[in-house]
Amino acid sequence: MSDLTGKTILVTGAGAGIGRAIAVAAARAGAVVIVTSHHDNGAETAELAGNGAQWVKCDVTARDDVEAAFARAEVIHGVVHNATSRLSSVPAKLLDVTREQWRDHADVSLLGAYHCAHAALPRLPEGGGRFVVMTSPAGMEGSPMNPLYGVVKGGLRGFAKSLAREWAPLGHTVTAVSPLAATEALTQAFANDPTLEGRLTRKVPLGWFGDPLRDIAPPVLFLLSDDSRYVTGQTLVVDGGRFMNL
Amino acid sequence: MPTMLLSGRTVHVSGDDLTLAHGLAAHGAELVGPDGPVDVVVHVVIGDLVEVPLADTDPDAWARRCDRVITEAIDAALAAHARMVGRGGRIVFVTPSFGLTGAAGLVPLATAAEGVRSLAKTAARQWGADGITVSCVARRVAGPEVAIPTFGPPSDDDVANTVALLASEHSGAVTGATLVVDGGTVLVP
Image (tube, rainbow over all chains, first blue to last red; front, side, top):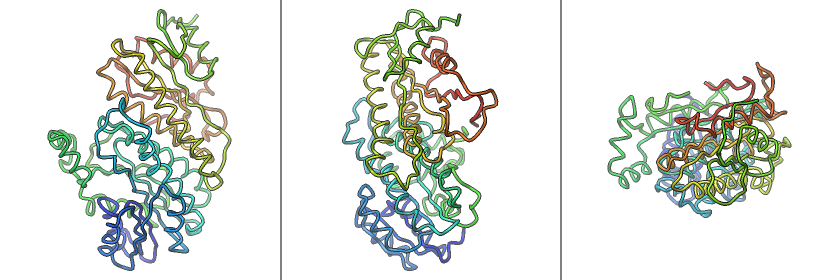
């Protein structure tokens, strides 16, 4: 596991699932973690993480909330923007999407990324900040189930690449991670569509869905660590080999 | 005289991209307005190309330079679908290729461009059964790209010819795809 001793890491959407796993793993790797979540479950994440982790209730769509969360530390070495609309696991047809649904998806994923980047820049350490956005297979190959989720996750890849170029002269890296994990959201999706689990498992060469703590978090920690200083603008696909189209 | 890829096909080009519209007309397209049944809808992603660091971008500018660009594309896709119900058709998004390569100072528009490419893939998946294909042409936009094209920068005709191909019957099994028209700058993996 990559060493994050002495680093402060902020994770959005860390109340459950992959965000919680990243927060816990980062703390185990030595980081002091600022756990942010819209819901109160972030308090439990901070407790699980330990090592001085603190929870900040934060709506990433609200600039003041984000600024207040980042203000918890003078220097923040790494940021993981994981927060995603709660609508992301609800199947939808593109023909039926509403402007309200767009607002929710776009504000959490895209406006949230913008707010986080804005708040992070003055606090990233000189010549070595890390900014990671969580994207999705839906952002690379479209989503047959959730069109707006696919749009914002694709948008985040554009965000990461361009911000990587913009921040490269400062020595900061910006990367994206596309995970395939057995999360509560996926479990919910399986409940909504009983045939989905079998269909999806057959598409994963390694034959299983990643465990958030054991399979997804470690590559994210690498991207947060000093070891990844020459990696920027990339999407790291952590999905058991499901997507090999690059 | 170019091959008449679009003879007998009705084409609506969004926005005021007269250059592209004329380029498609040269392929035999019958240009039509925003109403009624149509064979092809081309939506050009237009955005502010002034380079501004993200740190100097305020929330209003983010909304204008990113969010609005995507919602316009979603609206264009939905409007196109409504015009193609029961007859099928082709939707082509024209995006700036710096969405693929990344561009400092253009984070909001690059985010939107990649969002639109993802929209095209999702629409392609959901609307294939309706006989509608949805694809993208990522064109090189002068200015922000860092690499030198191996084949020289593309002309307006190069862009129009590629859009015409995707809009024609000669690209039957192509959907959800992006053709990069940049003279060999990106060379996607």
